[in-house]
Length: 603
Image 1 (cartoon, rainbow, N blue to C red):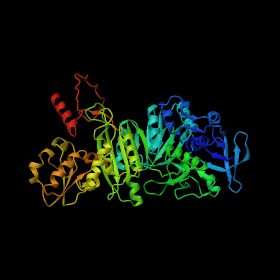
Image 2: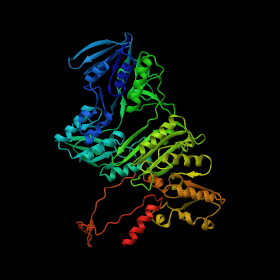
Image 3: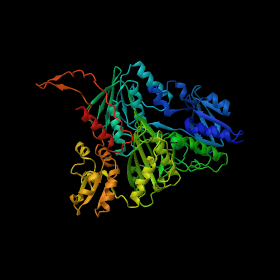
Image 4: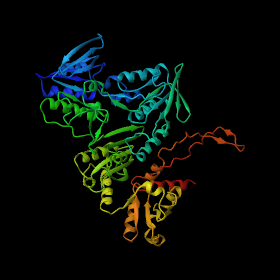
């Protein structure tokens, strides 16, 4: 009878234990966990802090008692494995309650130690009132601080997934929240122009967002914390959440002589075996292969950890099961928006030297004529020669998860952007469109690959060359509300009649609001002998691009009298009429024009 020892629970360890038992009733399984809980929903911790998940017990996926009864697993909590004796195939365990050590033998050992939050070397980082969030105990401590200190202010350091979720959670609890991010954008898994809407959403919801800013010191006095920033400003707060990332917990593996990779994780084979064939590693501490680049990577996500636990269990039981690399498919809620990604982003592709092309699509989440449609901004990255899908990102209020899930599945299956055109996806007006945003992205990318739509990007039009002309084909009303500096305006519907106004010795850089009218204009111009390119994503993507990292001050409403003195705002006048505008089903710029017509009737 085999004896399998598992170090650590939660996603990887607990899933390995359950899978082992389902495959064999004869294996002896011992699971060591140094804490009180072996399997809890750590991704749900911010949502209990916010109050969205009201009951703490809902976060407990499996208890030691249910694991023992249902799976016949010897679960030992408050038991820390302090050393691995590979030569004798045993582990040294410290019973934290009894404060004594003992040994336990194994035939196979599974390491699932997870990752620990990074605390940067900032003076005062360990002050009372400064927290990280990894487990239930951390969550309880944060909630206790809010209650005991009657906290009304919070600073979150780090704008990644945990930082974004925590700043929303604290804001939902009524705390005035400041988010400090070292980079010029939040959510570094997105490219900067795709992250720009998240910054706007944070500010719209009252978050004091400080980009390009670092924390220099944290000091505490009488329960109040002062956070000194690189800008020279100081933020006074009741609590600080540090969410600058995690590092794999590998000290056991290092001391045991297991191979540690370039990214700092435990090197594993596709079977999840380490450099010792009797020892497996799963979850956040395992260094796996990136699906796109083939390079080593660390992906601290629950989905991959669960699958890795299953694969390790399969291999121990003699099954031919292998981990096929990770795409890093993930999603994050930011107030009323969601942001999702799969594969590599543009920054990652450039770092690895992989050639890529990109297109942007701004499309409705479902049929525009059905109420409630919301815009999704989608970025698709692909190989310029083969159309291989390299990555995708999406931001929007509805339907983001569906589109990235579809593209992630297509990428995993080896489909190309040309294949996205032919995907038959669910359609009924409340749920989708006859041309789904994924199909639409496939159409646009295919047009680029087959030469029907030469494109340019936002950085191409910021400083156009002398032999290039910027042409805005939106309406004159749209043009007057804002355009790219130096552009001329010829609305699309007037273009055929005004071709003589365009110089034939210049390349024409065409743009509209989101790209569709620009494409139509380019088809006209190309067939009239003009050299032209369409700005993919249009003016909307350009605005996101030029707004990256810009700091905006809080809007303070005030009025001044004739002498220039501030005076209180006067109460607003009662609304005498309500005007309902039905813009369903109108393509760009229809909604804007409909709104203008309605406003004109009021004047």
